[in-house]
Length: 166
Length: 166
DNA sequence: AGGTTCATGTAACCCGTTACATGATTTC
DNA sequence: GAAATCATGTAACGGGTTACATGAACCT
Image (cartoon, rainbow over all chains, first blue to last red; front, side, top):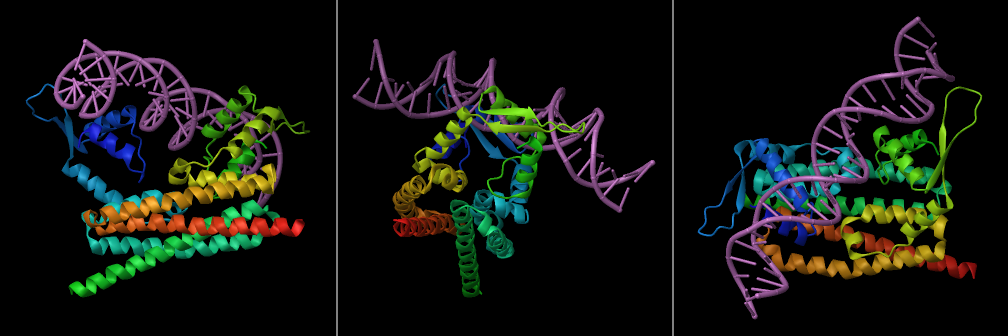
């Protein structure tokens, strides 16, 4: 893709929300190139308008896969759910369904462990907290619970699919 | 509070997650001071260890309230749910329950409007998307739905409370 | 001919991260 | 007396934001 293509995607889709500003994208692409993770070449064309197309190098693809394969940590669940979801969205095509299901298992386990911690916290401090603080915490807990339900149902979906293929 | 106090809070609580690094906090406090939003004074003490305590100025409190009162936008719902929740958590004590309930109403309305857009998007593009991409989007939708349920039940809680006080 | 879109880039500025530095006080 | 904690800060670096600049191609 070209920098311009990326800009349009980042500007139009809400998912994952990278910056669409040229001051972010073009230097970033150059960094990928100097780092050997991507390679850009000017698209040969009849016109004078140049389009620099980038493509991942093998090293870049390896780095991408390594990012996808990182284990899911407690900290990811607390602060980086959107990043986890983006990794998951890319994972299916890149790592295959078995690995993707494994990711969901890790995600579910971390949620399973973390939700009781939050509930415990709420129980201990509820009477010292203002109503809106309590409710905000409850909102977070319910969000995590919804994600846990989603993860479990997705896991069983992958399992059913696998049994059908076998 | 002092910078050190803030560091401890940011390091220990998961909510809202400001940076706890001194390179972020101390310059930020100085900026608040130069901007006239906070005023810091060295706590008088018998020891030689200095503690600089900060307090909001009237101007700072006004800016804080203005931040809390900002209308809830579609963009907030898409990208800044954690910030919205933090605003809500602070709101109860600072703006009162009536204003807090109004915030919840705006939040619920934005969710109510946005969820069908996402569902529509999913329906249109589901067959062109890989399974994991589809599931990731569904996870987002279910998260929003959970938040909408939470908002509605919180609204009715505030309403019940208000009727009881009347 | 003029406005819009395509397409890439740079420069000033702001600010967070990482890492280091300094010294007082408390704890074992 | 050593280690941990209290408490504040600075410097180098990376990278995003905003705003500006440049020019080609397309549409009317």
